[in-house]
Length: 421
Image 1 (cartoon, rainbow, N blue to C red):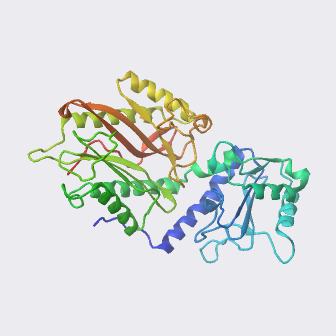
Image 2: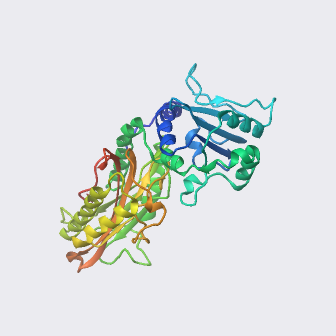
Image 3: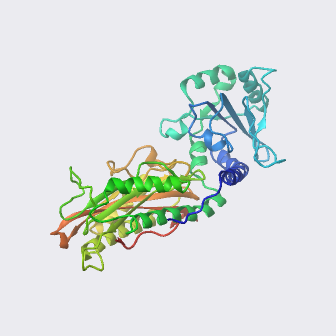
């Protein structure tokens, strides 16, 4: 079985809360200053949580609990005051540690909205950020009712100061702390190990194992290892009798097949996303056909081009256009649909193409790349295979990378050789 030790739940909670405390202390003040916000109000009701709020609440919280309001306000020294206006407090797990949020409401003394208005009035912020955005769903979590209620609670003098908190909400979700970046290689290594075991004779029995068998093996393996799948894995066969465009895909895996997998999981609140390929050797073969190896090399070349163009300050659309132009000049047949990773699988940050939007993505594709962010470098190339009568195969690759120091770097390497079974 796979050896991928995960922490006990209590240890996971302790580590995640340490990360959260560090992020609140170190990252949030910088992000609020960058967004030019004096205050940030995050409001959510239980079971209708804002996409941001659960990343702000400590373990072992699993919901917003009735109606929770978090009020963040920048102080003169640049630090951020953190208040919780809710029925339940949010202490840290460490005994004797300073609470992550100061409890600011006594329900026996005043109404929740009265408390909010009193606190905001006393701090007198010029620009108050709220989670409304026409572009990013991640920054649009303030529900219609809560928006109306907030405006009534603040009154006309304060509510005219409300602005979109898109910049700080997206920045908070996409930005990784030093500790999180240091952990990510271990996380991605788990993904690579999971795929390597799935693409082995220990799991696949040619002529017996089906693609559905392999999909559910992956789901079960992740569950048993304490990892949470964030989408159903996908397996596809390409072979001389099986195109990637086939409307009736063969399910039973046979010698001579090119296998593709798409799999991702979350652990400690962070996500992975991988796509790799394997080849099932025919009797007498010791390697995959040269045409398949050349196809993988073409996929690696497209990865190289995208990684070179993935630079801080460039928008997702600019990166897409520059990568595609260079790839086409190299004679490749490219498709680029790269996305951020982090607290979500398809996470906050710039969209770098969609499979059906290779001309660019207005709005989300116009957002720029920042340092200390993580991406799933997702793309594909089409390439003819002479040994298959010139049939075109699709090499779809996805590997995780981080941006630091202005440029992109692989987190734990990439696939440069086909898995052989």
